Structures are given as C-alpha cells and as structure tokens.
Length: 250
Image (cartoon, rainbow, N blue to C red; front, side, top):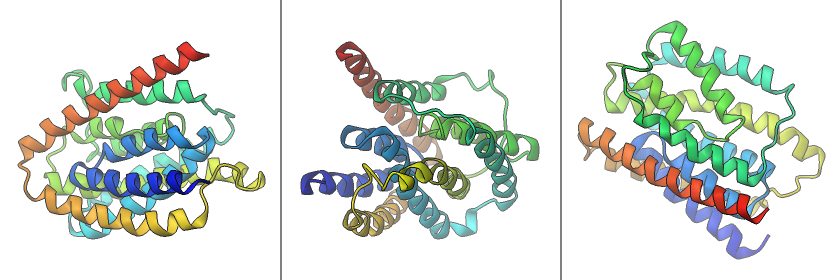
C-alpha cells in the first residue's frame, strides 16, 4: 500500500471519529465512503468495522455513566440474530451499489417522526433495532440514520443517546468484522492495509473521539439534532452523485 493511501486512511480515521464523538453517528458514514475510494469493497467492511468498533468502544467508555445498558443488551440479541442470518447470504455489493446504499440511508432522517413510531428504550423495539441496524450494517456497511430512528423518540438526553448508541454499535461492527473478515483472512488479507496504518489510526480514532466529546458539551439538544440532519444530508447527496458516476462508467 502506498504511504499516501495509508496516510489518507489515518487522517480520515481521526476526523470521522471526532465527528461521531459529537453526534454519535455521521462519522461512520463519512469513513466508509472515504475507505471505498482507496480500498476493495470487502476490505472496506473489515477496516471500517475495526476502526468503528474501537472508536465506539472508546466513546462508550468515555461516556459510560450515561450508557443505558438495558437497551444495549437487548440490542445485542437482535444483532446476533441478524449476523446469524446474514452469514448464510453471500452478498457483496459493487462499489457503485455500495455508494448508492450509503447515499440512500441518510434520507431516513427526513422521515416525519409520526410515520415510524419506534423507541429503543422499549425492550421489543431495542431488539428490532439490533436486528435492523446490524442487517443494514452488513449490507450497506453503515446504519447510523437507521439507528437514529430508534432513538429520536426516546426521552434520553444527548449524552445518553451518544453513549448508548456507541455501546450498541460495538455489537454491530464486531459482527461485520467476523463475517467479512473470515473470507479475507482465508485469502491472505488481500486489500487490508498493513499493520502500521492501524498502529496510527487506532490511537488517533480514540483521540478524535475524545475531541468530539469536548465539542458535544458546547451543543444544545436542539442544535445537536439540527446539525446532524444537515451533515447527513450533505454526505448522502455526495454519495448519490458518486454512485451515479460509477454506474455511468460501467
């Protein structure tokens, strides 16, 4: 791997972790698209899963007093079921399809709240959340806006939302690493960045997460949701344009 490519991955790991540190999402969506620019599709799932797993785990640790564990454990059961089903489905999207799926996912933030009445603080819906979010993670590679749908109606504060989302995503990204990583290991790790990239990217992801947490303190709950919707919309639009370009070149 070229040094410039590795440096690009490292810088994006920091910036996107900081973004997720503020909003609890969006960073993963941005990182996935960045990785797809320089890595094979299958490798993006593994690298994205690993970096996001560590970033989310560190974010959950930093905000551990706000984590709603009764939601996390039920979510985990749904995530395990989704992974068990998806493991038997040989599905690997093309790069164009990957960008298309990632571009469509942010559109969920614009659905009127009355259309989908779900609340992750309720056990059955926490299970459904784990099932649907993990399934989306294993197909599009990202599922932040889907996760947000389940949290937007809860009575949780922005700190509890960010912390609990982070803890739930440890399950989803772990499933992604296992399902997509096993074939890559069998193939000799083709397309996966060398260890020196992870040696820099992992601590910088943790640093970015901490930096995002500082910015989170400066946001009100109203600004938190308004800025998040805007950022997701911009990212989604960019990905749809990229998908159209790739389909046109086929």
